[in-house]
Amino acid sequence: MLMAFVKDFKGAAQILEKAGYTHFTPHYITWYCPQAFTLSRHCKSQCINRGRYCEGENQDFICTD
Image 1 (tube, rainbow, N blue to C red):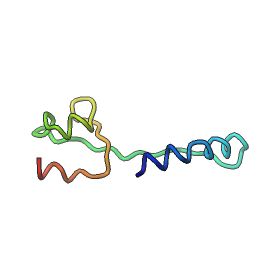
Image 2 (image 1 turned 60 degrees about the horizontal axis):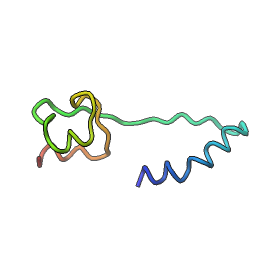
Image 3 (image 1 turned 90 degrees about the horizontal axis):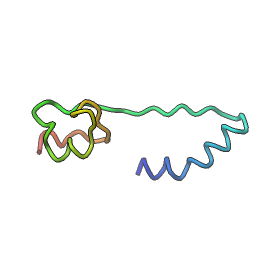
């Protein structure tokens, strides 16, 4: 859902910024995958740099993987 918003709002954000009405500074939340789970399917699909930087809003998978 978040990625859909970013994709849909991109054009409007560029127009507003180019016109000088605003300045957008995106912020991202990242987390790390604990050592014991770096080879899990979830960490492999959501993380880079051997689990050091992961994306996604829900980290609850660690308890169920």
